Image (tube, rainbow, N blue to C red; front, side, top):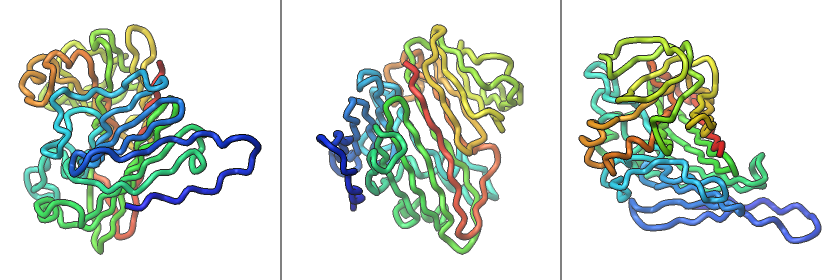
Amino acid sequence: MVERANRPSALTPGAAAPEAQVNIEGSGDSSKVVATLPSGESVEVLLFGATVTSWKSNGGKTENLWLSEKAALDGSKAVRGGVPVVFPVFGPPPKSGHPTSSLPQHGFARTSRWEFLGKSTSEDTVDSNSVKLDFGLYSKGVSEEARKAWPLDFGLVYSVTLSKDSLQTIINVRNEGETSFEFQFLLHTYLKVNDISKVAINGLTGVSYIDKVLDASTHSQSGSITITGEVDRVYQSIPQDTTSVVEDGTPRFDVVRDNLPDTVVWNPWVEKAKAMGDFAPDEDYKHMVCVEVGAVNGWQKLEKGEVFEGGQTIKSLL
């Protein structure tokens, strides 16, 4: 695990500006990378799944991500909450006839241990108060079971950039084998809200979506999304980049997609929240909403040596 060398500081009078602090905490599958800006904002990334489990803005005072009280943070299962990485298949895999058919739901990236590749601080980034953390997952690094189910050669680099008022998460997928492969990708982001009954999601008017609650029927979004029951929708081929979360009339988040055409909106509501053993407290469906950017309508195809890159920037508007 080699950290990138720092670039020389600019020769300016006075003391150098403080840099972001980056530390590795814990051991084994409980290891996490914690980065804190001089202004107090922070992010925590579990090496198991490269799952972002905390993102605090507003000088470190405001937690923006919802994390279940019963989330497994020891590598025993995928994390319930934060920002899990879904790859190379979204949801239950095709029943047969596709290379991902033998994989578990949502693939293996969120249940594999990633490598911390190092950091880039303010001297390497556009924002003078930011830090970028890079994580890698490669064919040889996945479990024997996953490798057997999906025996294709790939390389993933996942970059998490913390800035004063935003969090950017970008995936780079490379085909490192001799044959082409297809994949899906999603960032399963759990946003923290105070009261789901006062939340409206804007920016998807007129977009076609598949409603998984209504037997996977297709509909067109009319106006803002409000949540009064279980919601599980896949919005497809969205023309605009930004989806906004407003709470009680006040803008809370902007979720900006980068080279990803789709967005899933999800809230389990009462019964499903109770049925999930790792969702706690049961009533916390009132305090979260998932706005998940991805490429999940069909498949992305990479030929030998080709690269795909896409992700999101979440802006905290408090």
